[in-house]
Amino acid sequence: MKERLFFFAQDEKAAKAMIGSLETLGLEESDLHVIANDRAATEPLPEADLTHRSDVVDAAKRGAATGGALGLLGGVLVVTVPPAGLTLGGGALLAGTALGSALGTWFSTLVGVSVPNQDVEQYRQRIDAGEVMIIVDATEDQRQLLTTLMQQRYPDTLLLQGNLDAA
Image (cartoon, rainbow, N blue to C red; front, side, top):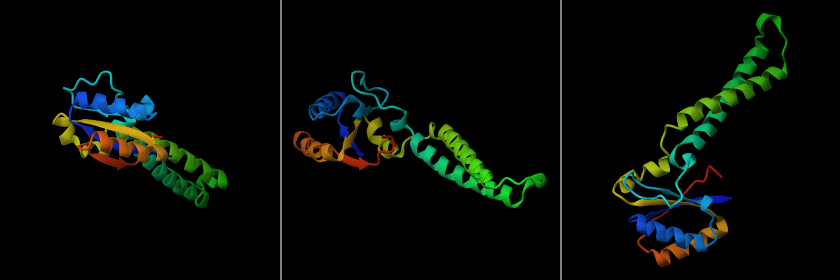
């Protein structure tokens, strides 16, 4: 299982150096992501994708759970009060839950794409001020080595730990 770690570099040059250090630990480019303000030149650095910038993953989970529960409730209503004398049984429960979960996931994902990731947004002031957020998806074994390396080489770097919903 992977954990998400957040580091902050003072500028693009420091971020490039930090990414280089992280790659020496065996981290792949798919595990490294950078978020910076619009003025930063981060082109050679691995850009954060939609799952890092938005709330799409959490929204999909909430939508699936809520939609599934509502679909199950709808299925129970159809079974207990059958329309037009139909007897549906357990199939109505299963179909209602599946349909509700699918629709809930779809609708919530549409909304989640437009909602910023809260782990990123709580540090928006730092990003807007010119700092570069480096997001690292690391295994538990890599985490200790990664933390030690970053504290030794970059002692002024802020280390934060978050959830990893995308992997």
